[in-house]
Length: 145
Image (tube, rainbow, N blue to C red; front, side, top):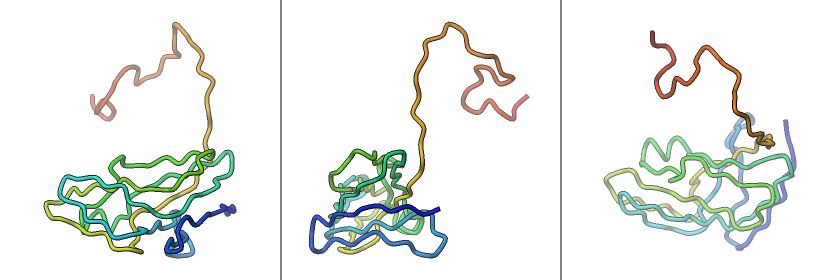
């Protein structure tokens, strides 16, 4: 399924998101400038773009697997959420989980964004909830006897 997303370049050096292959679910986001990230540090990486995400879709920013596994760089918030009414610059809070200083180069792919439909909810106060077999079993409770 394909949709159109308007992109505004906030800088001449900004790179429009691209897909790595025909069936990629996420489009690559590119660093606007070089940034050095110390071990255990988080830095906001500017992309130099803003998006007009259609109503009913959300932009979700995920790690690039190669960057995360080979260099220990991944979004600090694990998944970034870009709402359809946000018109500011897309930035990636990149966290260095490695033990070495890492430099992100200008034009380097730093994360990927996927667009998904979403539901909103009307929250209704209730004194009772429907019972299930799992019930109140929490973390690690499934698959145990």
